[in-house]
Length: 335
Image 1: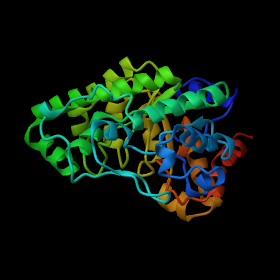
Image 2: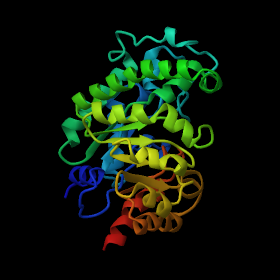
Image 3: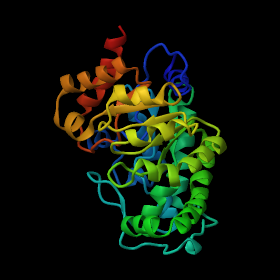
């Protein structure tokens, strides 16, 4: 199998020649930016640089996937949020203290949503990558879920308070915001994405499993039905309390955090949804050496995790050698 075949088979829980190495969020680092002269913030806003930096996951690190959407703010920028773009050693962020919506009635998907420079950049980068690597590596796009967009457009605290005080209006907000998720996802599929990451940050430290079932399970079922490629759901934090619900959505895979045990997580999924992850970022990849990386890779492989890689977008100062150790350890384990 080549990398593309391997990833798509694993996402469909079919046999593979070896476990794919995948990070469906981001493997961009300052070292890689310097290597290919594609630094932030330009690599978040110029298609050629975005594609060049993204390709390093395949060409330099040996991963089976290429994922060009390094940030979580492209759609929010197109929806009107104010963005702090930062420099190459820091992530761009939404200025949460400057919300663009107060109620569900304020929500409008702009007519230029897909032609806005920050969404158009992603679509062009995917087209570039599909043309150059589309027969070899799996090209993965990213479309933010409505819970994440709610945080960005309303502010985290106001949106969480709304979900406590007015569940009906919260659902109306999510129902309107989901159209941005779907529009951007469909456009990326048309541009050439083989699969989509769907981050929806109902994280374990802020939102309970019951909240996930109340607000997001049905929406995620709808996404799995309407977006006709494998969908990789991403939620940070300890999420075993909602994995049963996630397994019911029809999502192809769940990108899971190192706060969850691989063995327990696989037992909950019961083959209904692939798992992607869950090598620890801040302690292992950023702070430790290759031998610790190797041990975490082996634990995931021994548990039967379908695709192995970092738990989330990696710290920008992560050493390349630690990232290269992931595919190296996977090959050694299979041999």
